[in-house]
Amino acid sequence: MTWGWSFFECDNCQALHLPHMQNFDGVFDAKIDLIDNTILFSAMAEVRPSAVLPLAADLSAINASSLTVKAFLDMQDDNLPKLVVCQSLSVMQGVTYEQFAWFVRQSEEQISMVILEANAHQLLLPTDDEGQNNVTENYFLH
Image 1 (cartoon, rainbow, N blue to C red):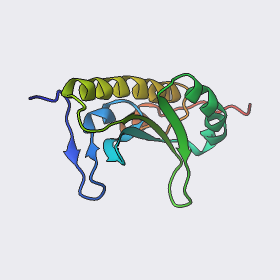
Image 2 (spheres, helix red, strand yellow):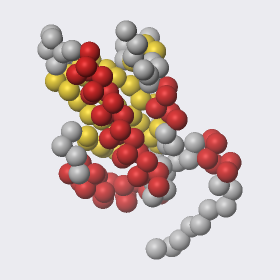
Image 3 (cartoon, helix red, strand yellow):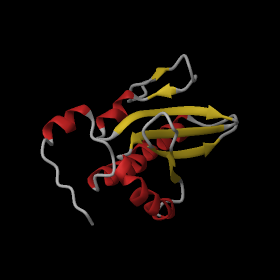
């Protein structure tokens, strides 16, 4: 049985990390985790500190635009703010491979759309490659 996507199991959190999701601009970590009979697919992106307020204002609209994908800001004192976008599937025994594969594909598509939209509005920190390509940036007072 082939999965069609790459993953590795993390020793620290026991989740399946998805390195191919880092190909989407802005995503620095994505993983699938099983928590209390719930499969949780989540992706994280670092937010520009100056974009925290505009992004926080958009969270209600982002969450209302999808029945299943939810987004929130994770802000801690010692790290940059992060946009966390996730989708969950309640499971018990009997989830088929096809159901799981469909969930993963749908999660990848919907979560990547949220991240790409935030990146298009320059709310996310550029990855190292992006930062070198965008030497000049425009900053506005309004």
